[in-house]
Image (cartoon, rainbow, N blue to C red; front, top):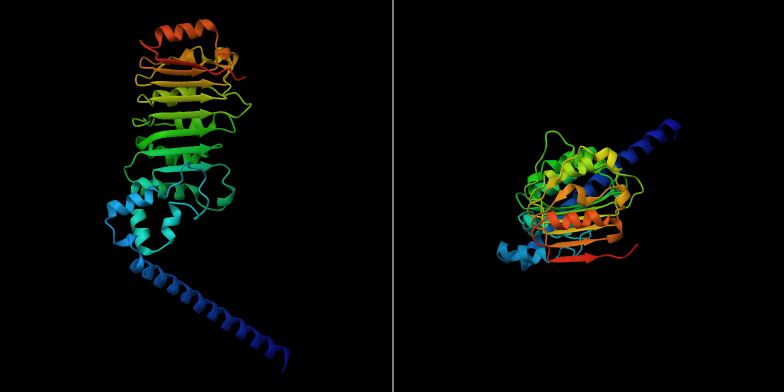
Length: 295
């Protein structure tokens, strides 16, 4: 056979192989679909009332939410068992009410994170949300979160850089009130200094806060904050302020909390006068004051 004939035969064989691969992929898809249908018929959970099966699924969620490890954990795992389980999971908004996002999300390179986040939160429907960020949020994800600002009940922010997350959440225009937000944790873990302005703007939008936790933050000095007005948090009952040097910003200067009951602080971090003034004017009754003497 000539070279041209051999090349033609090789090309034909390659084409036949690709066709067979496509046939194999179709068969695999059909097998998977039939297996899911068979699992649904055999599965006793699929025959339970939705209210009961939803409660069972909620018990599958991790006790301590962390970065979602692919499809090996609930709730994503529940979508890959059978058709019936997928239907139950998607009909249970509380399964999707908690999400932990870690930056940079190296395992999700090349994916549209905004679309993934939006789809996840859509599945929560009107359920109140518990969202945690570890690292620095990008602008697209910040915009996505703000679309659901009215549903936020708990927000945990663990920063690796100063300020950017607050600029996105507290400095957005138009402003997005956070009427359902009850718990806010802000943990610095950064040597950079932060500005009080976007943080206080975020607090001013969160007037129903019940618990506020500031830790390991370093703020700009007083000269930058002279024109900042205090934020009134009428429902705040617990305030934690640890690891914040007094020379780099003083939580007590900017917050008024008339309903405060529990205050946990690093005493060495605050000038005595500021602490006495806060306890005197911050609210009518403080039932618990706890020192944290760790350096």
